[in-house]
Image (tube, rainbow, N blue to C red; front, side):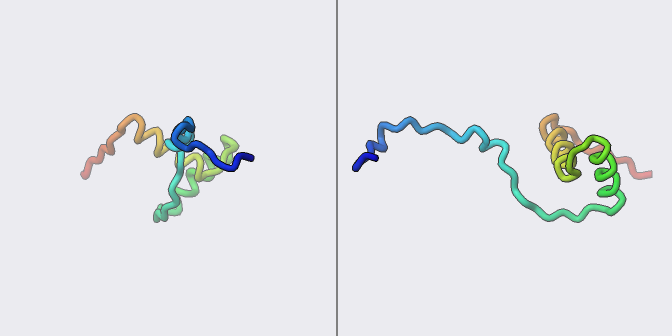
Length: 71
């Protein structure tokens, strides 16, 4: 180990996973909605929270907008 390091000449690189970092949040989701995702996740063999995250990420990536009709 060196006594001194030349920090200025280090090759700093960005964390390749920085775009994939997750943040814990609290959401109130209807029980039937959670049950739906749990059932679907079980069929796909992945955790339901991962499935919900994948779904929401896909919506954000493709800039999907909610379409609601009040009748």
